[in-house]
Image 1 (cartoon, helix red, strand yellow):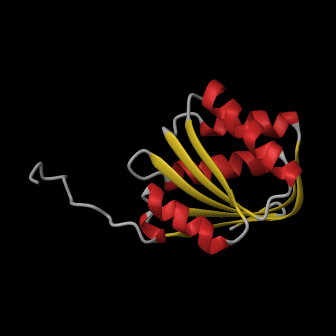
Image 2 (image 1 turned 120 degrees about the horizontal axis):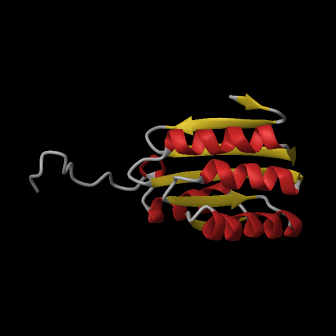
Length: 141
């Protein structure tokens, strides 16, 4: 799905892929948050953020993004291709989300997508190869 200059894709059952380019506007941030909520499984939203070039995000956009994350218990975000400035921005947003939205936010940076997917797998992302675990819906082990 195209959102502004960005793309949002889903790998079932539990991975959201954000291709982020240039500036993130408030409407983009709201769409990212809505996609994260829709893709949250078992209380966790797994995100693979692919950064293309320098990104920018105004205070208004950051606020919209943090508001959109309210209600998501835990975000696990693997970021690929972020410059130093983009890393600082991502860490700022993650810290604000932890404090203001009371969201768990695990954030890691990678030089390549395979490394990012390996980390997401280790965090429990089934789309990245983690075992799905036993079905406990019946109450039986």
